[in-house]
Image (tube, rainbow, N blue to C red; front, side, top):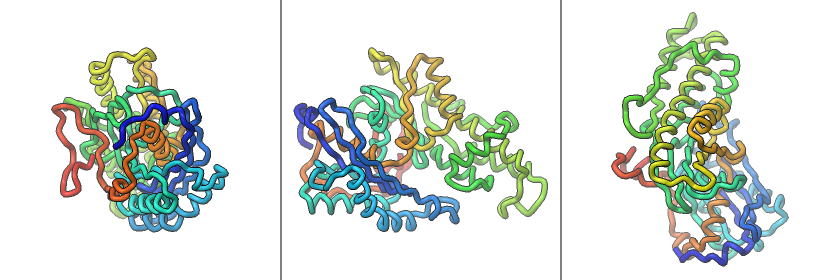
Length: 388
């Protein structure tokens, strides 16, 4: 990496961002004016929900094929929306991992081709760093802050100390929160994507009907677990079935029971997220003296759009005297603007490697954003490295 160059921060910069890590094809163009704030010139997203609906979840091969079919036209649409040509772009930022490897390959390879053809710098971005910095698209969020990243593939608590300086305080030891929402929605026959379907069903439900367990209450630390909660929903659904075939043949639940299960699961997930976040807040405040603006909790990722979860975290922050910052929903879910923002911040700091080096960077299915805090165990493993 080159050394940081403060002069670059005062120069208007235009970044094209490409995100293809899962089932959303996303392209954005942002420009930083002399004040350093990013202005979003284009933000294009193609969601593949309909293409995966019949399978009850994301099929990696279908996702990769859809990225191939849509990405070029989405880039053209973003350039048209911004009123720019590629000659007016200063650099291309693209997700290089972690994610579904087929999709990551499509986006990163496309970015490499653009950079080669137009002699532009390529900035490979960790998808999780995009989420970590997404709040800085719309809100004043100076470093440091505590990040709760809660999405379909990741659930982590990360101390964001500076650009490129992150420490993981907690992570899920099994399912991510969004994955648990998706699987619970499938279990209850609610369809996909699971988060919005659970929230909609829970609107008419009684959150106190089922007393679901509180995971890891006796375990120290800030890690999460959603596998047991998922199992508890399954067992409650089995007991509640009044007629029909066996459970695995999609036994029917009456509408009120389905709503109550959804509401009870959602409430339990919110309690668990708030409980572990409370622990991380204590760790963070012990390690960081209070900034002039006070401590801040930033919540990012698709699950951050859930109103029950936001309410639980808002109550926690009010109790602890922290500020809660949640980006608008369109920047919580996967989007190209957050990748462009991460690329912009790296470009402004001069943290851009030579093109020969970035062209050689492979797509990565696994790419941890941060090392665990001292003494915390690694989670996951295998030939591809740590999962978290």
